[in-house]
Length: 287
Image (cartoon, rainbow, N blue to C red; front, side):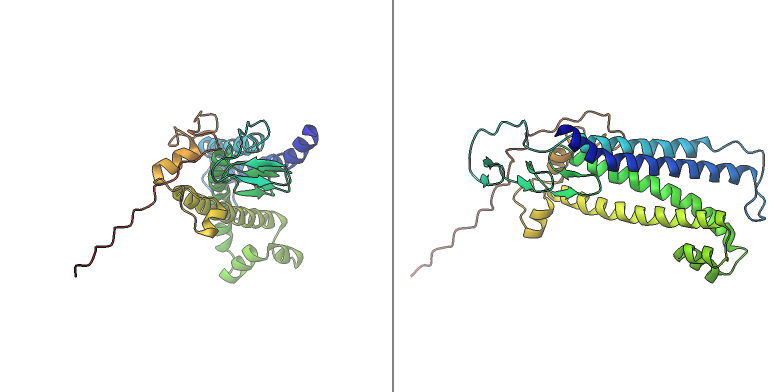
């Protein structure tokens, strides 16, 4: 069972590694050509040192993204191996697992297990987002968005050079429908590759950025997606405490590398709630 589960979860990670490697190779070719050769007749200054810093930066971002993805998959937030003492205040009963579960815990029918502080099931990575792996999910989105933006801007530089030869309409069509422009013979295969990679990087960047902003908002508000829809803010303890609950004690360093240890303050079973606001007593009327 464990082997089959890992095989299912490892497939998206391997696919991401292949796509990341392809992006690195494509960027390497672009950097090499921008340094030594001309792109469609536009000469670039030769003899410049190879932009190693750009390539190293991209490798750093992709390496962090893949390592965060691996840790997101392996750091299971499920209740397997977790000692649940018994039903307490706010606990519920899971009929699928036939056990009592703590607050903010929910059953995932894709993983066939209850997940501590469950947010949602990530279909792309085949793992649930919960208490133990929320940090790696946020950092994956951050480094993935940065790497995709880097690739998009680099390829856009080539597209901007192509725009000097063609009309603006030609360039817009190249970016919007590169396949059509290739099929009707308006662009070369190399130009099509530049435009296609730019589009893929831009779509991926917007996708990652949108999810990152949404989940960053949830983190600052101390909510899960379900609690956000329900308007439940009983676990909101202030933005600093909320960050520490999700990212750990060293929340300000975890963005740099997934290898930085940052222990979580809780156990995923009990959560501190904010004190209810005390309503002022109604003043008694004098008669």
